[in-house]
Image 1: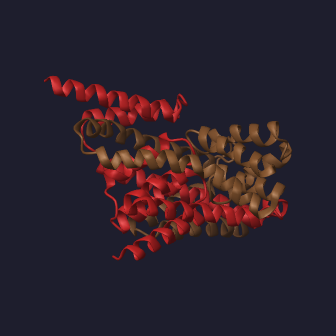
Image 2 (image 1 turned 180 degrees about the horizontal axis):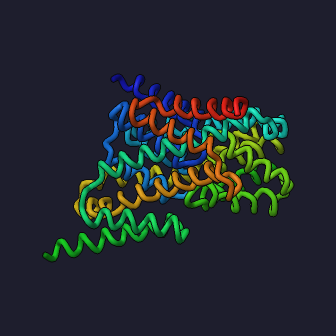
Length: 182
Length: 181
Protein backbone atom coordinates (compact mmCIF):
# COMPACT_ATOMS: atom_id res chain seq x y z
CA UNK A 1 0.00 0.00 0.00
CA UNK A 2 1.28 3.50 -0.79
CA UNK A 3 2.11 5.71 2.16
CA UNK A 4 -0.65 8.19 1.38
CA UNK A 5 -3.20 5.39 1.29
CA UNK A 6 -1.97 4.02 4.61
CA UNK A 7 -2.31 7.44 6.25
CA UNK A 8 -5.76 7.92 4.78
CA UNK A 9 -6.90 4.49 5.92
CA UNK A 10 -5.44 5.14 9.38
CA UNK A 11 -7.33 8.43 9.65
CA UNK A 12 -10.54 6.91 8.38
CA UNK A 13 -10.26 3.94 10.78
CA UNK A 14 -9.58 5.97 13.92
CA UNK A 15 -12.27 8.52 12.99
CA UNK A 16 -14.82 5.77 12.43
CA UNK A 17 -13.90 3.87 15.61
CA UNK A 18 -13.95 7.02 17.70
CA UNK A 19 -17.38 8.00 16.35
CA UNK A 20 -18.97 4.72 17.33
CA UNK A 21 -17.15 3.98 20.56
CA UNK A 22 -19.33 4.43 23.58
CA UNK A 23 -18.22 3.61 27.09
CA UNK A 24 -14.63 4.60 27.56
CA UNK A 25 -11.07 3.87 26.57
CA UNK A 26 -11.04 0.08 26.84
CA UNK A 27 -13.79 -0.22 24.29
CA UNK A 28 -11.91 1.72 21.63
CA UNK A 29 -8.72 -0.20 22.40
CA UNK A 30 -10.69 -3.42 21.90
CA UNK A 31 -12.03 -2.16 18.58
CA UNK A 32 -8.57 -1.01 17.48
CA UNK A 33 -7.33 -4.53 18.13
CA UNK A 34 -10.08 -5.98 15.94
CA UNK A 35 -9.37 -3.48 13.18
CA UNK A 36 -5.58 -3.28 13.10
CA UNK A 37 -4.65 -6.80 14.27
CA UNK A 38 -7.43 -9.09 13.05
CA UNK A 39 -8.65 -7.25 9.97
CA UNK A 40 -5.78 -5.23 8.50
CA UNK A 41 -2.87 -7.24 10.02
CA UNK A 42 -0.85 -4.06 10.51
CA UNK A 43 0.08 -4.99 14.08
CA UNK A 44 0.93 -8.30 15.79
CA UNK A 45 -1.29 -9.49 18.62
CA UNK A 46 1.51 -9.37 21.25
CA UNK A 47 2.61 -5.96 20.06
CA UNK A 48 -0.95 -4.68 20.40
CA UNK A 49 -1.03 -5.76 24.06
CA UNK A 50 2.21 -3.84 24.61
CA UNK A 51 0.72 -0.76 22.98
CA UNK A 52 -2.35 -1.06 25.22
CA UNK A 53 -0.03 -1.22 28.22
CA UNK A 54 1.67 1.98 27.05
CA UNK A 55 -1.70 3.68 26.48
CA UNK A 56 -2.78 2.69 29.94
CA UNK A 57 0.23 3.54 31.97
CA UNK A 58 0.74 7.00 30.48
CA UNK A 59 -1.44 9.89 31.69
CA UNK A 60 -4.30 11.16 29.51
CA UNK A 61 -7.32 9.52 27.87
CA UNK A 62 -6.66 5.87 26.94
CA UNK A 63 -8.32 6.31 23.53
CA UNK A 64 -5.97 9.16 22.60
CA UNK A 65 -2.92 7.37 23.99
CA UNK A 66 -3.87 4.23 22.08
CA UNK A 67 -4.27 6.21 18.85
CA UNK A 68 -0.81 7.75 19.32
CA UNK A 69 1.02 4.47 19.93
CA UNK A 70 -0.87 2.61 17.19
CA UNK A 71 -0.40 5.50 14.72
CA UNK A 72 3.29 5.71 15.56
CA UNK A 73 3.73 1.99 14.96
CA UNK A 74 1.97 2.14 11.59
CA UNK A 75 3.46 5.30 10.09
CA UNK A 76 5.84 7.04 12.50
CA UNK A 77 5.22 10.58 13.75
CA UNK A 78 2.88 11.56 10.87
CA UNK A 79 0.92 8.39 11.64
CA UNK A 80 0.61 9.34 15.31
CA UNK A 81 -0.57 12.85 14.33
CA UNK A 82 -3.16 11.54 11.87
CA UNK A 83 -4.46 8.92 14.31
CA UNK A 84 -4.86 11.49 17.11
CA UNK A 85 -6.70 13.82 14.76
CA UNK A 86 -9.05 11.02 13.70
CA UNK A 87 -9.64 10.06 17.30
CA UNK A 88 -10.16 13.59 18.68
CA UNK A 89 -12.38 15.07 15.95
CA UNK A 90 -15.56 13.03 16.57
CA UNK A 91 -15.96 14.01 20.26
CA UNK A 92 -15.13 17.61 19.34
CA UNK A 93 -17.80 17.72 16.64
CA UNK A 94 -20.46 15.73 18.50
CA UNK A 95 -20.08 17.55 21.81
CA UNK A 96 -20.04 21.02 20.30
CA UNK A 97 -23.35 20.24 18.60
CA UNK A 98 -24.90 18.59 21.66
CA UNK A 99 -23.85 21.34 24.06
CA UNK A 100 -26.53 23.56 22.49
CA UNK A 101 -29.46 21.31 23.35
CA UNK A 102 -28.08 18.84 25.88
CA UNK A 103 -31.09 18.89 28.21
CA UNK A 104 -33.30 17.59 25.43
CA UNK A 105 -30.72 14.96 24.54
CA UNK A 106 -30.42 13.61 28.08
CA UNK A 107 -34.17 13.25 28.51
CA UNK A 108 -34.95 11.61 25.15
CA UNK A 109 -36.34 8.09 25.78
CA UNK A 110 -35.35 6.67 22.40
CA UNK A 111 -31.72 7.73 22.87
CA UNK A 112 -31.70 6.24 26.38
CA UNK A 113 -33.01 2.90 25.10
CA UNK A 114 -30.53 2.78 22.22
CA UNK A 115 -27.63 3.51 24.54
CA UNK A 116 -28.65 1.01 27.18
CA UNK A 117 -28.91 -1.72 24.53
CA UNK A 118 -25.55 -0.76 23.09
CA UNK A 119 -24.00 -1.08 26.53
CA UNK A 120 -24.91 -4.79 26.61
CA UNK A 121 -23.41 -5.13 23.11
CA UNK A 122 -20.20 -3.44 24.22
CA UNK A 123 -19.97 -5.85 27.16
CA UNK A 124 -20.29 -8.78 24.76
CA UNK A 125 -17.62 -7.31 22.49
CA UNK A 126 -15.10 -6.95 25.31
CA UNK A 127 -15.92 -10.47 26.54
CA UNK A 128 -15.30 -11.83 23.04
CA UNK A 129 -11.95 -10.08 22.67
CA UNK A 130 -10.83 -11.19 26.12
CA UNK A 131 -11.63 -14.81 25.19
CA UNK A 132 -9.48 -14.46 22.05
CA UNK A 133 -6.64 -12.90 23.99
CA UNK A 134 -6.63 -15.58 26.69
CA UNK A 135 -6.60 -18.26 23.97
CA UNK A 136 -3.64 -16.54 22.28
CA UNK A 137 -1.77 -15.95 25.54
CA UNK A 138 1.57 -17.47 26.46
CA UNK A 139 0.60 -20.76 28.19
CA UNK A 140 2.91 -20.69 31.19
CA UNK A 141 2.03 -20.98 34.85
CA UNK A 142 3.49 -17.53 35.48
CA UNK A 143 1.28 -15.92 32.83
CA UNK A 144 -1.84 -17.43 34.35
CA UNK A 145 -0.76 -16.36 37.83
CA UNK A 146 -0.26 -12.77 36.64
CA UNK A 147 -3.58 -12.81 34.78
CA UNK A 148 -5.53 -13.97 37.83
CA UNK A 149 -3.55 -11.84 40.28
CA UNK A 150 -4.01 -8.65 38.27
CA UNK A 151 -7.70 -9.39 37.86
CA UNK A 152 -8.26 -9.88 41.60
CA UNK A 153 -6.18 -6.80 42.47
CA UNK A 154 -8.11 -4.54 40.11
CA UNK A 155 -11.62 -5.96 40.28
CA UNK A 156 -11.94 -6.90 43.95
CA UNK A 157 -9.43 -4.61 45.63
CA UNK A 158 -9.76 -1.65 43.28
CA UNK A 159 -5.99 -1.21 43.09
CA UNK A 160 -4.95 1.55 40.69
CA UNK A 161 -4.00 0.37 37.19
CA UNK A 162 -0.72 2.31 37.34
CA UNK A 163 0.46 0.29 40.39
CA UNK A 164 -0.44 -3.02 38.76
CA UNK A 165 1.55 -2.13 35.66
CA UNK A 166 4.48 -0.89 37.74
CA UNK A 167 4.45 -4.13 39.72
CA UNK A 168 4.60 -6.23 36.54
CA UNK A 169 7.49 -4.15 35.22
CA UNK A 170 9.40 -4.78 38.47
CA UNK A 171 8.56 -8.47 38.30
CA UNK A 172 9.91 -8.58 34.74
CA UNK A 173 13.17 -6.90 35.80
CA UNK A 174 13.66 -9.36 38.67
CA UNK A 175 12.92 -12.34 36.42
CA UNK A 176 15.38 -11.25 33.76
CA UNK A 177 18.13 -10.69 36.37
CA UNK A 178 17.55 -14.18 37.76
CA UNK A 179 17.61 -15.71 34.30
CA UNK A 180 20.99 -14.13 33.63
CA UNK A 181 22.48 -15.69 36.77
CA UNK A 182 21.39 -19.25 35.97
CA UNK B 1 -6.77 35.64 28.92
CA UNK B 2 -9.60 33.14 29.07
CA UNK B 3 -7.76 31.06 26.48
CA UNK B 4 -4.66 30.93 28.64
CA UNK B 5 -6.69 29.73 31.61
CA UNK B 6 -8.38 27.10 29.45
CA UNK B 7 -5.02 25.88 28.20
CA UNK B 8 -3.51 25.69 31.69
CA UNK B 9 -6.51 23.88 33.12
CA UNK B 10 -6.81 21.27 30.43
CA UNK B 11 -3.06 20.73 30.25
CA UNK B 12 -3.35 19.64 33.89
CA UNK B 13 -6.30 17.38 33.11
CA UNK B 14 -4.31 15.74 30.32
CA UNK B 15 -1.15 15.45 32.36
CA UNK B 16 -2.50 14.12 35.65
CA UNK B 17 -5.35 11.81 34.72
CA UNK B 18 -4.01 8.29 35.07
CA UNK B 19 -6.08 5.21 34.40
CA UNK B 20 -8.59 6.94 32.13
CA UNK B 21 -12.34 7.51 32.39
CA UNK B 22 -13.68 7.65 35.90
CA UNK B 23 -10.34 8.48 37.47
CA UNK B 24 -10.21 11.72 35.52
CA UNK B 25 -13.70 12.92 36.47
CA UNK B 26 -12.62 14.13 39.93
CA UNK B 27 -9.70 16.00 38.42
CA UNK B 28 -11.89 17.69 35.81
CA UNK B 29 -14.44 18.65 38.42
CA UNK B 30 -11.78 20.31 40.53
CA UNK B 31 -10.57 22.40 37.58
CA UNK B 32 -13.88 23.24 35.99
CA UNK B 33 -16.23 23.57 38.96
CA UNK B 34 -14.22 24.30 42.11
CA UNK B 35 -11.31 26.35 40.80
CA UNK B 36 -12.67 28.29 37.83
CA UNK B 37 -16.48 28.11 38.25
CA UNK B 38 -16.91 27.58 34.52
CA UNK B 39 -19.73 25.11 35.19
CA UNK B 40 -22.17 24.69 38.08
CA UNK B 41 -22.20 21.31 39.80
CA UNK B 42 -25.50 20.50 38.12
CA UNK B 43 -24.08 21.34 34.69
CA UNK B 44 -21.05 19.21 35.47
CA UNK B 45 -23.23 16.22 36.39
CA UNK B 46 -25.12 16.68 33.12
CA UNK B 47 -21.80 16.74 31.33
CA UNK B 48 -20.76 13.42 32.91
CA UNK B 49 -24.10 11.92 31.84
CA UNK B 50 -23.64 13.20 28.28
CA UNK B 51 -20.10 11.81 28.24
CA UNK B 52 -21.42 8.38 29.08
CA UNK B 53 -24.02 8.66 26.36
CA UNK B 54 -21.76 9.94 23.59
CA UNK B 55 -18.57 8.57 22.08
CA UNK B 56 -15.21 9.88 23.18
CA UNK B 57 -13.20 10.17 26.40
CA UNK B 58 -14.70 12.14 29.30
CA UNK B 59 -11.71 14.48 29.33
CA UNK B 60 -12.14 15.47 25.67
CA UNK B 61 -15.90 15.78 26.00
CA UNK B 62 -15.42 18.10 28.96
CA UNK B 63 -12.85 20.13 27.08
CA UNK B 64 -15.27 20.68 24.21
CA UNK B 65 -18.27 21.35 26.45
CA UNK B 66 -16.48 23.84 28.69
CA UNK B 67 -14.58 25.45 25.81
CA UNK B 68 -17.79 25.97 23.81
CA UNK B 69 -19.55 27.43 26.80
CA UNK B 70 -16.99 30.05 27.69
CA UNK B 71 -15.36 30.88 24.31
CA UNK B 72 -17.31 29.26 21.48
CA UNK B 73 -15.84 26.89 18.92
CA UNK B 74 -12.32 28.30 19.18
CA UNK B 75 -12.49 27.70 22.93
CA UNK B 76 -13.49 24.09 22.31
CA UNK B 77 -10.57 23.55 19.94
CA UNK B 78 -8.10 25.26 22.30
CA UNK B 79 -9.16 23.19 25.31
CA UNK B 80 -9.11 19.93 23.31
CA UNK B 81 -5.61 20.60 22.00
CA UNK B 82 -4.34 21.46 25.48
CA UNK B 83 -5.85 18.25 26.83
CA UNK B 84 -4.19 16.11 24.15
CA UNK B 85 -0.74 17.74 24.18
CA UNK B 86 0.72 15.90 27.23
CA UNK B 87 -0.37 12.54 25.77
CA UNK B 88 1.26 13.32 22.43
CA UNK B 89 4.59 14.07 24.06
CA UNK B 90 4.63 11.30 26.67
CA UNK B 91 3.11 8.46 24.63
CA UNK B 92 5.15 9.54 21.59
CA UNK B 93 8.36 9.22 23.60
CA UNK B 94 7.42 5.89 25.18
CA UNK B 95 6.41 4.48 21.78
CA UNK B 96 9.69 5.64 20.29
CA UNK B 97 11.71 3.82 22.98
CA UNK B 98 9.45 0.79 22.83
CA UNK B 99 10.01 0.22 19.12
CA UNK B 100 13.70 0.97 19.44
CA UNK B 101 14.45 -1.36 22.35
CA UNK B 102 11.68 -3.95 22.36
CA UNK B 103 14.00 -6.71 21.16
CA UNK B 104 16.32 -6.42 24.15
CA UNK B 105 15.93 -9.50 26.32
CA UNK B 106 15.19 -7.54 29.51
CA UNK B 107 12.42 -5.61 27.77
CA UNK B 108 11.08 -8.88 26.36
CA UNK B 109 10.86 -10.37 29.84
CA UNK B 110 9.15 -7.27 31.22
CA UNK B 111 6.63 -7.26 28.38
CA UNK B 112 5.96 -10.94 28.92
CA UNK B 113 5.04 -10.23 32.53
CA UNK B 114 2.93 -7.24 31.48
CA UNK B 115 0.76 -8.86 28.79
CA UNK B 116 -1.39 -11.13 31.00
CA UNK B 117 -1.98 -8.18 33.35
CA UNK B 118 -3.24 -6.06 30.45
CA UNK B 119 -5.68 -8.81 29.47
CA UNK B 120 -6.89 -8.94 33.09
CA UNK B 121 -7.42 -5.17 33.15
CA UNK B 122 -9.44 -5.25 29.94
CA UNK B 123 -11.50 -8.08 31.42
CA UNK B 124 -12.16 -5.96 34.54
CA UNK B 125 -13.34 -3.01 32.46
CA UNK B 126 -15.61 -5.38 30.51
CA UNK B 127 -17.09 -6.87 33.68
CA UNK B 128 -17.86 -3.41 35.07
CA UNK B 129 -19.71 -2.54 31.87
CA UNK B 130 -21.57 -5.87 31.88
CA UNK B 131 -22.62 -5.60 35.52
CA UNK B 132 -23.85 -2.02 35.14
CA UNK B 133 -25.78 -3.15 32.08
CA UNK B 134 -27.35 -6.18 33.85
CA UNK B 135 -28.06 -4.23 37.05
CA UNK B 136 -28.65 -0.62 35.93
CA UNK B 137 -29.74 0.66 39.35
CA UNK B 138 -27.44 -1.61 41.32
CA UNK B 139 -29.92 -4.31 42.38
CA UNK B 140 -32.76 -5.16 39.96
CA UNK B 141 -31.80 -7.56 37.21
CA UNK B 142 -32.55 -6.42 33.65
CA UNK B 143 -33.47 -9.42 31.50
CA UNK B 144 -33.37 -7.58 28.14
CA UNK B 145 -29.69 -6.76 28.75
CA UNK B 146 -28.90 -10.45 29.24
CA UNK B 147 -30.73 -11.33 25.99
CA UNK B 148 -28.90 -8.53 24.16
CA UNK B 149 -25.58 -9.63 25.60
CA UNK B 150 -26.05 -13.28 24.55
CA UNK B 151 -27.25 -12.31 21.08
CA UNK B 152 -24.29 -9.96 20.57
CA UNK B 153 -21.78 -12.52 21.83
CA UNK B 154 -23.29 -15.14 19.52
CA UNK B 155 -23.11 -12.88 16.44
CA UNK B 156 -19.54 -11.87 17.26
CA UNK B 157 -18.16 -15.36 17.94
CA UNK B 158 -20.16 -17.56 15.62
CA UNK B 159 -20.54 -15.28 12.58
CA UNK B 160 -17.67 -12.82 13.21
CA UNK B 161 -19.89 -9.86 12.41
CA UNK B 162 -18.51 -6.34 12.40
CA UNK B 163 -18.46 -5.21 16.08
CA UNK B 164 -19.94 -1.77 15.39
CA UNK B 165 -22.83 -3.32 13.46
CA UNK B 166 -23.44 -5.70 16.38
CA UNK B 167 -23.49 -2.77 18.83
CA UNK B 168 -26.04 -0.91 16.71
CA UNK B 169 -28.19 -4.07 16.53
CA UNK B 170 -28.07 -4.37 20.34
CA UNK B 171 -29.28 -0.78 20.64
CA UNK B 172 -32.14 -1.35 18.18
CA UNK B 173 -33.15 -4.60 19.97
CA UNK B 174 -33.49 -2.69 23.24
CA UNK B 175 -35.82 -0.18 21.53
CA UNK B 176 -37.76 -3.15 20.07
CA UNK B 177 -38.06 -4.88 23.47
CA UNK B 178 -39.41 -1.67 25.03
CA UNK B 179 -42.23 -1.26 22.51
CA UNK B 180 -43.11 -4.98 22.25
CA UNK B 181 -42.99 -5.97 25.94
